[in-house]
Length: 580
Figure (cartoon, rainbow, N blue to C red):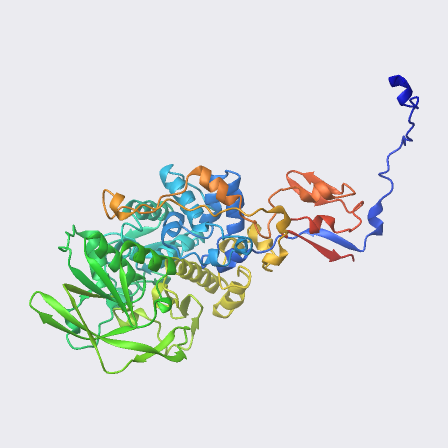
């Protein structure tokens, strides 16, 4: 049998074809629900005290649009390179990506963007309202005071910042060790604020007399001088202990030699105590951190505690100092064992009580205290007798003539750089509302600027920017179409051991490379915002999604309201609404 005999004869195939367009058949008339582009709020943004638009930041970074990324950050936060190093990134705790594998390394990406701006000397002309003729006095050039000056200047105010120390920065310069925050980073980001026209006057300590004399020259005052006096241990021999915050200050201002490989005790469980202990390790000292509660109850940031332990800091938990005695060139620190009482404090930490009458002696060469701090003077706190004082979550507004605002560590329940920035921003907004609409309008107007369910505020929303149209509803993990995302490991910055550093106070963690940033930002869900993936156009059976000037629009003449575009949107940036 030949090959031709295996197959039937070919028969022509005729397909009918219309010669007219079907555009006349406007199938949109069948619709009873319609899709719309409805960008929502990412939980990371709501969890960020500074209220950064993190979903958009990650999206722009993934596209290599670093200048736009930096502009987006600077709308809400003047310190990206600083926060990329020292922020405790609550944003990552809230990250939806953790439902699939691990949260996005948001702080590492922010550090890369901040460092890129510093390295390339990038400058920007952020939106700034016209000069309104009002002049503000700011006491303290720490993160809250500098942030207040930054946002007030953008709102059209003229700001003078008075600082008691020789250089601006506050805790950024004098209380955070160089291995966490180098001077060059602080200098560069403070300079950005100076470039706005903010005047910083150093070596000038504000007093009550100074403020009284200055009332004729300023329309308002912001007090953000921080906690300048360390708390003392009320125990026998407590005055023999050294001030941990003062030690960190001297580490920044003086050349501190090795402490002869002795042993030192650090009393406390906060970030200052951890910084003191880690600094001592770098000076060749065996550091023992004594804390009266459990390790998990320490107010210090968890990552910092873990890093301290890796570097060799020993933590003695559930011990409280009861006395200090000198013995030759050393000290005997007597410790009282503690135990949980079965109750919790208002902050959720375990209450502890003495565990019997036995004590334990610890022989050390030096003892440092870092058990907290308080304002140096009573006038640095808002007066409780003033009936017209508005207490907000990050600041207090005292409606005197002129008005006084108090912020930073003086009013923040959480003592962090990000919360200090939030305090400066909220103060700037509150003062602007006061001058324009009065004291009673402050709360309602601030509520209109909340990111999600708050308490973070957005300056972009306050200025009626694009973000003001964002739906406050937060996107949950269940709202994400995870079929479009594959598990991928979180990128980690390289960490160097102390033994590999030429200088033990050099940074131990490196900045991401461009490749690492691209890889990490692609893991981001970009919760609630459109990143132009075009799934809506690809899957629309009616081809009813038009692209005009890079904007996607629904052609309602043909959209049947099937909702496929909404279902196939990976990041929940669309919604269906009832046809009216």
